[in-house]
Length: 202
Image (cartoon, rainbow, N blue to C red; front, side, top):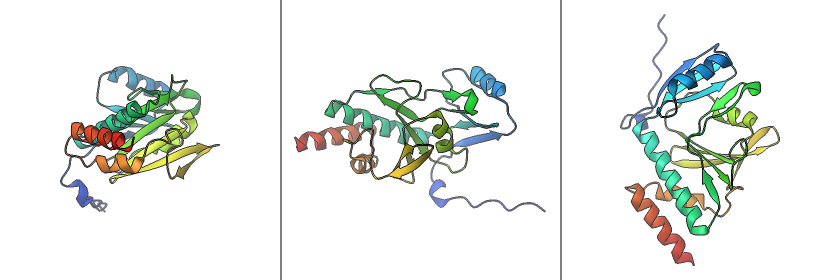
């Protein structure tokens, strides 16, 4: 019997969709080989969780959201003189934990240690590996997840992530303001509006 075709979210019909390939029973050396073959400049993101390998080619819409969000966070930090260091899609991996991921964006307050303080993930298309489970064992202190036009914040508490109402790493940033500016027609317009709003508060 042919399994039913899963329903497509109508919100995705008007937009592009991230493409994913999931491979199971993949050992760590194969994960390392995939990273080496992909190289540093490809747009394909690779994640690994206990023998499962995910190859994801982000859509234009995915990249648009993550870039606008990154530009807003960075502009906010400049305006408030926060020593934020950006590391893009830095490959984070730990063989003994059988985990590896490449966040959409990641940051540290000041120079990074072995992992950044903050990872940002844009979930444009459902499915794929549980990135919180990967970051949990890598020790990333905070993860922001954009999904369906909302930003959820998760803080690492011991051995698990807990949702929190606002960032603890960047408490100065009003994420509701950032979220509202993601609706601006262009990245430049979003950043200009942010700077104007912040300077009006002074």
